[in-house]
Amino acid sequence: MPDKYYIKTYGCQMNELDGSQMGRLLGKHGYQATQVPEEASVILINTCSIREKASHKVYSDVGRFRALKLRNPEVILGVTGCQAQAESAHLHKRFPYLDLVVGPDHTGRIPELIEKAKREGGQQVAAVKLERRDDYQFLNLLPDEAESAHQALVTIMKGCDNFCSFCIVPFVRGREVCRDAEEIVAEVRDLAERGTLEVTLLGQNVNSYGVGRHAADPNALSFAKLLRRLSRETAIQRIRFTTSHPKDLSEELIEEFRDNPKLAAHFHLPIQSGSDAVLKRMYRDYTREGYLEKIARLRQARADLAISTDVIVGFCGETDAEFQDTLDLLEELRYDSIYSFVYSERPKTTAAQHFADDVPLEVKQERLRRLQDLQNRITLEKNVEWVGKTAEVLVEGPSRQGTTYSGRSSQNHIVHFEGSEAEVGTLLKVKILRACSNSLIGEKDVG
Ligand code: SF4
Image 1 (cartoon, protein in one colour):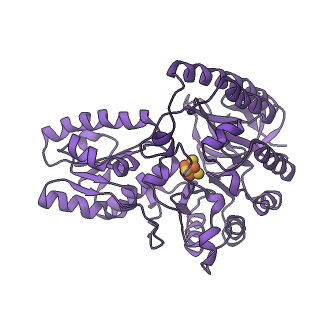
Image 2: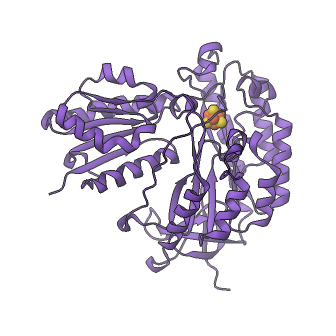
Image 3: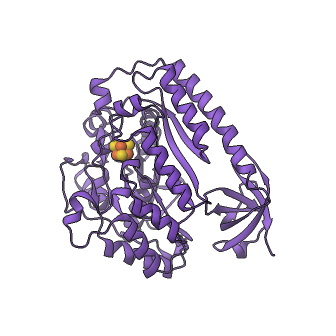
């Protein structure tokens, strides 16, 4: 019987992809995946450190999985991902029975570190110094036949140079490194040949792909040009990407949205706050007005575009008036959806070191509730506008309720309809009959 691995992943799509890549690597070393931790001889908790709450969950996981290690001391238990990078020394001390603490830049070394832990015992710690480095090797492991899917995640860059004052990412993922364009095109071409219809390109700030210091690289392309190459030189049918920084959203990219029908009609553009004063404290490097202009240009370029954003509520010093600016912005922009969070201080960031986290928790929570109530109303109104229209849906599989099938529209709505197994992994036209707060309900448009 081959050894089995169990990976529990927290956090963003980038972490999700790292988790899959770890699984593929372990697969190449003879391991099999399992969803049951009790069956596994290797248990990895792939962590996120973007918010305090996610960090705390990991501590309880480590305790829970330790029980399995006590039952069978040969079980290898490891923490990987951003928290392993951010807190390697702390994890090392607090949980001396951990076999591995491995930061994101060392994902490729996991099989070797597991072997070392088995051979030598003790804790294998692989966190990196986060200095600038351009020799970073991106993992390039395609899904195997068994996991071959209609949608795939593709990394195009890693790290971030922006140092927004609230954000831990540059401290755990390091400085920005762009992946070679030829490698990206080759991976997307391979995926399309295996039946993938839609790719999501991943990076902390994809809009800055190929600009700045990367411009000196003869292979570097701007992000818009990379999108054009992927559309022209591969058989992929739909391209999404995440995430974008408003300051780097170029006119060239806006024009690409106008001209390139393979780009999904969805743009996620994090605003974080509607107040210029808060944006300044966040070191975001754009103004409310500049942001509004870019959204107007995007909507001009592509009328069917859905727009979503991220908002942080209760950032250091946020006053009632500054919070009201964010509510007003939501009313004005009418996003299709938002991801919203209360601010939580993260170690090493400028905000943690220099600004007081002085908005009381109950005020933060009350603001979050008001913000979400407002957006829920807007989202439902925007969804209702879809009734009677036809959406192009990539069918993903049976709905959770099991009575219908569901998929994603180009605008990233979840759409439920009467379908069949044979339609999974195809693009279908679905006429929208009803709108709910989180999804649309329709029927196949046979007209
Ligand atoms: S752009 Fe700002 S928020 Fe986004 S990853 Fe970089 S530092 Fe964090």
